[in-house]
Image 1 (tube, rainbow, N blue to C red):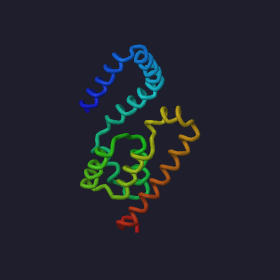
Image 2: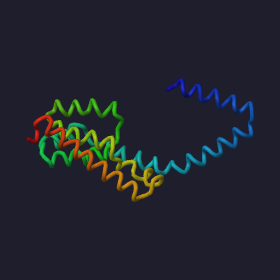
Image 3: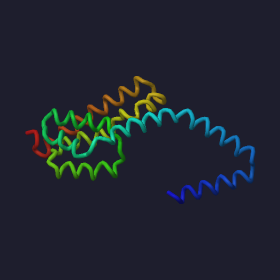
Image 4: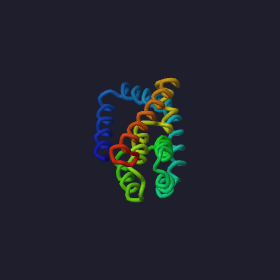
Length: 159
């Protein structure tokens, strides 16, 4: 990551010395675009900071108690409001599995975590529109529920 910063800094410096006016104009354009999307990102950060206060053990406790359709639904809801990258989500799914959470609930949680974006709704609405964002999230939630039920059937947790 530091390498990217160094390369960016060097490219900016070279650009500045080659043509100062174009570089200043580019910085102004970039600042305007950044300031337009900043409020949406700040909303996401606020939502995430609240969500991160919920300990993983508490989530596992609630998801582990109910491995039925209620568990699938709760896993989907928790996954929809949480936001984390895959390299954190998959080890977390392993922890949930070790704590007794069923595979179909974990599938529901991880799939909605990746596909449904309640935390990213403000930014997504800004770019794609309210109806497109809602339709995408509802369809993604439905697909996640189908995947979770399929996992439950495959691993013998439902039938």
